[in-house]
Length: 111
Length: 111
Image 1 (cartoon, each protein chain N blue to C red):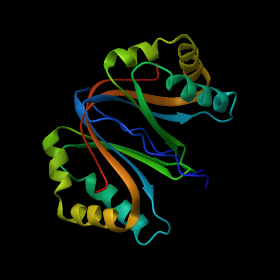
Image 2: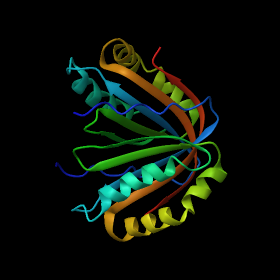
Image 3: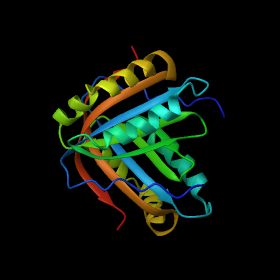
Image 4: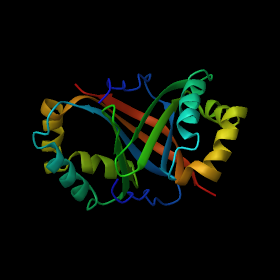
């Protein structure tokens, strides 16, 4: 196990979460490099608040990214390089996925 | 890799998501059995819509459970056996965690 990834340090709600759950197709085919690049690129977008991501041994992947508002989410969805990645994801990398856009209303951590 | 876990089959929004992200402490100490039991018990609660969960090789765990409404979430939080698990989680199993309650407004899958 490598060093633990930090939990995202988000502000007080309200803010937004994009819950992306997926099953990968077999083989890397450029996925790892794209994934790293998208994490790097997302962090530079206006309104980005953080990301948390894990893929389990059963192949199910969850990535939750946090955003200031819906406009930030839409701007990221329309970012050129991200759009190319979305298309490659549909065509090559993902056997199935679901995207859910949700407004975070309450949050609490370990006492 | 075992058989892929299915993505949750949730209804049309609006509905609610509880995003639970965590770092485990070292050692199992009853965690695996509790985790299996909570998945089983949650699925029997009124208003439960599904769950998706993964823990990555860096130790970060994400579990997103889906619920019909906030009343269902509060009822599950107050379920007796779940309350015991929450306390053991605070005291023993989790080095850190964050719970976020969010209202899912839009959702879409792979075309």
